[in-house]
Amino acid sequence: MPIYLISKVGDPFFAFTIGVSAAFLRICRDQREKFPEKAQEIGYGEVLQMGGRRLRRWWMGDFEGL
Image (tube, rainbow, N blue to C red; front, side):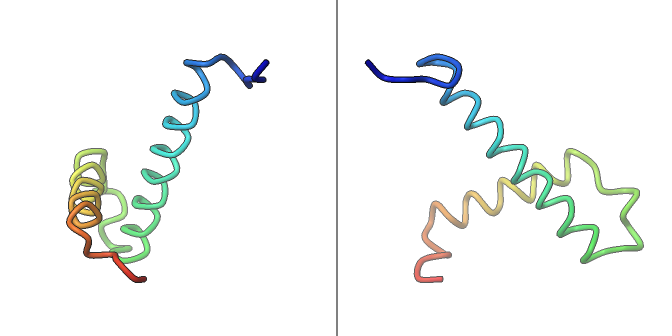
């Protein structure tokens, strides 16, 4: 019998949530380090756009072989 942390449905949802939040926090940190003068202006919209661009680049294979 398989052992689940939460449930059969809850475990993938939990993992997805943790992964998305980790990516969001990393993009925020990268942008704040890159543009310290704009640190207060970096919001959810800009981070989501940056994440979307990174996801698109990954899907197209730009990070192949790194």
